[in-house]
Image (cartoon, rainbow, N blue to C red):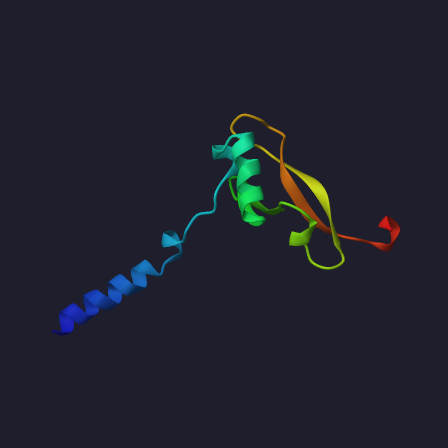
Length: 97
């Protein structure tokens, strides 16, 4: 009985490891049109853009916090090295107004 508890506990701990974490979608495995549609469909999403690189992309300014504006966001896709996939939220400074 005791050995079965150890196995159950070990399997629970193994399933909680970072290796089992869900990976984020990557723009490099999507076409430009697919990446753009992905952002538009979700409103706001974090996408991988290369090895250990990621950013948050939004479909429009309504996805940003108060005091933020949007700038065009470009990312590499499978068919375009500089695809505009959506927008990035940026802080508005006094100089920008």
